[in-house]
Amino acid sequence: MNARLIAFLLLWPVAALGQGFAGLGTDATGFAIPAPDPVFDFPADHGPHPDYRIEWWYVTANLAGPDGTDYGVQWTLFRSALAPGEGEGWISPQVWFAHAAVTTPGAHHVAERFARGGIGQAGVTAQPFDAWIDDWQMTGETLDKVTLTASGTEFRYDLRLAAQGPLVFHGDRGFSVKSAEGQASYYYSQPFYRVEGVLDLPDGPVPVTGEAWLDREYSSQPLSSTQSGWDWFSLSFDTGDKLMGFRLRQTDGSAYTSATWIGADGATQAYGDGALTAEPLQDAEVAGREIPVTWRVRLPDRDIDVTVEALNPEAWMAVSIPYWEGPVRVGGSHAGRGYLEMTGYE
Image 1 (spheres, one colour):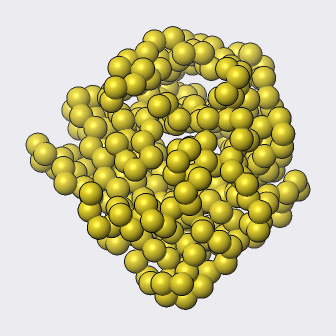
Image 2: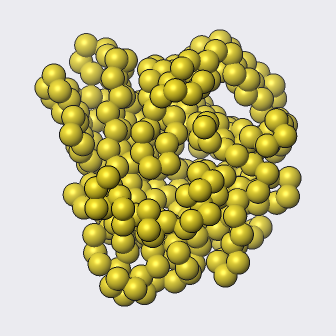
């Protein structure tokens, strides 16, 4: 165990670490709580919100090389607060960590970074936009046009992202409810990035093109205490339409669902609990766990009935709090591709 990981474990809230993703349902006393009818202020809200306990800047990309080989890329910067507020130097209560990955049909490369806030090692500025941890960076004059870089022992990528559509707000104008008890987050996305760049892999550099999806979310108690994890889908159809949907698993075996239909023109429609169904069809043994890697996803109001299948079932994020994250292929009523994230599988 390296020194940076030891420091992270000492700094991470004990309840959250002990419960994994279920720790996101622990008490949020003292932190700001998302409320209905949010009023966003851009570009300021692209930056950090230190009075909220947890926040992320989350990019996933579906890419292809010159020979048609499919690739997936993930870049995520997390901010987690030990207490509300900023603070200078080592007294800052803000902890930063990041995950990066490249997925191919036959391999999954993962890296992780940690930092303490207040010392310049990691952070986000809203204008010009810059999100960084060490030499991993997402940066540009605005969020509409950014470069994305990260590296691990077996990969590096340098990508250019350009938005081709508007921001999208989930739930009720960005107020995204996560449970019957009312836990919620502020949640918006930029799902219309076009991408070009280079992946450096063990076999050499690969020029790639494709599309990317940025998720921005912040909250202080995004899960209920009776929820253990989630299954999240971001699907881009060949028609240009898109679907975001998630299933939050309850400890009694039931689930709470939510979805956003995103038209090719950027128009949206939100769907509350029960409108979307996500049914596991096939499991694979991954990292000693049974993980559902093929799904049936339905949204009857939009005549969606699709099979979602992992490009690489072994896309396990072997990080401090592990989870599954990887590119998927979509068939059935609609064809396309996307990303699937599954947390809380012990």
